[in-house]
Every structure is written in C-alpha cells, then in structure tokens.
Amino acid sequence: MALTHLATKCGISTNQLQQLLKGKVSASISSKLGVSANALQAFINGQGSPALANKLGMSSIALKELRQTLDKQGAVGLLIGLLTPFTAATP
View 1: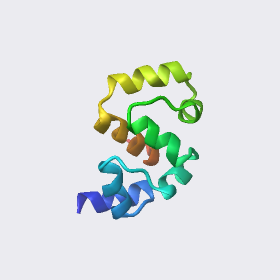
View 2: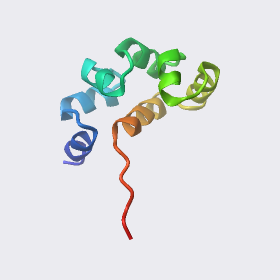
View 3: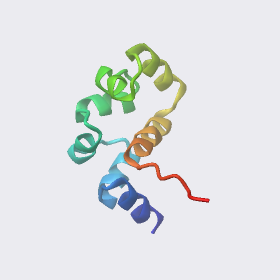
View 4: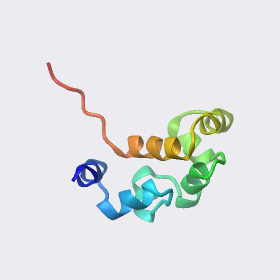
C-alpha cells in the first residue's frame, strides 16, 4: 500500500517504482525528469551524469562526488525525491 501511495505521488506506476527500487530506470521516469534513461542509469550505477548535473544546477564533478558519497539505494532515493513534488505544509 505504501508503494502505491508513493508511486502515485511520483506520478509513476507501482511497477515502475518497484523497478526503480531495484535500480532500473524506465523511459517514463527519464521523461518525467527530463534526463535520458541512460544518464540516470549511469548515475545509479555509480557514474557521473552531465545531463543530470545540469538538471540539478551543479557541476558534473559535484554530482560525481555526491554519487560517491551515496550508495546505490541513496542514488535511487535521490531520483525518487526528484520525482516527488514538494508541497509545503500550511500552518
């Protein structure tokens, strides 16, 4: 149930979320993020991605350092965070 809720918030199917959690990027996810699936897959697999760095407004070197700090699941978590729209809580 929690995966379904998160997938809905991300605007992807539960199956696509499950695949992303396994480290596999779908074309739908890459389209939503505006970065090629190959670039996102490279990031998950531990490499830098100039396209993703540009999307995040950082240098490729900074993104590569960030990726080296994160493990594979951390990289996946970052992508999930990018898919999830931020909504500020109202007081």
